Length: 69
Image (cartoon, rainbow, N blue to C red; front, side, top):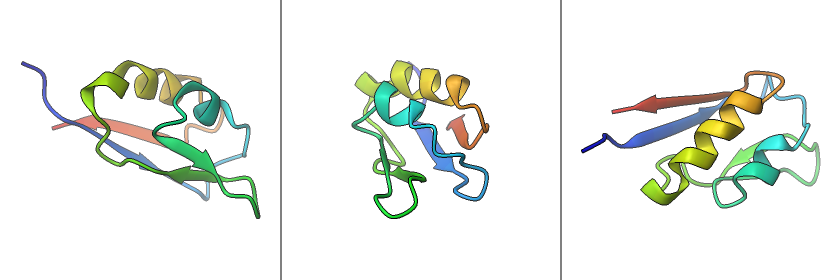
């Protein structure tokens, strides 16, 4: 059995590319005012684990941190 996934974002590092939103829209959004990442689910359901990891891997600013507890 795998642990729970926790997600954190660094809005100061975010460059607003939107890759995370396209990859995992249930977990990430973009702020309408500045285009920066908004974390919708800091503890996503297991069904989102693969897309969250992909979003973190593809973030050009490395603004997404994924940890397993």
